[in-house]
Length: 184
Image (cartoon, rainbow, N blue to C red; front, side, top):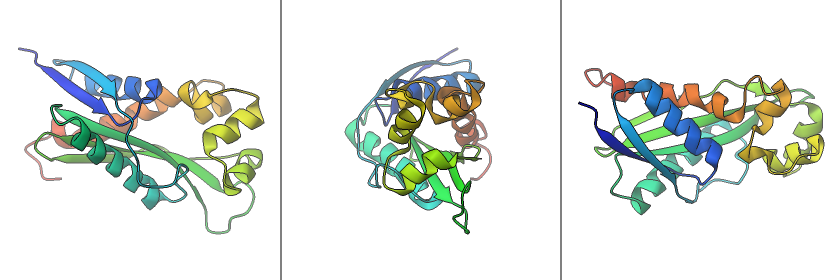
């Protein structure tokens, strides 16, 4: 018998909400879900600049959503970040995102997306303090691209959009919930 679960996404961005829902539906197809997003702080800069800072932002978002909306079954934080490779030369700024899922019992799943490199036109703006989404809008002549196809969609010609980019990481973050007999 299918059960209905409530998922709180720690963002009001429709791309993140849709990616969370699709990940849950693909990983647990026997359940039905309701989702909604809440605006909560990440506790990290608007543009996280290291892998660790990005993971912390996703974890903070999931925990803050749990504190704000305590009746749910799952809380999910998705945080995009960047990091320069050690030489910090041109073509070295990587983009990625972390996904953290927490369930009612406190079990936590974490996963990271694939990483890819930014063109120097975008990287220079981000290194100068601009958030990636704003840099994308400036370089690509768009408006609010982070709530549409995102940086990855702009760079791949929508072969991979921001939503389809997040879905595998949501699925990977759900591995501990799918394999409850194992220790994570």
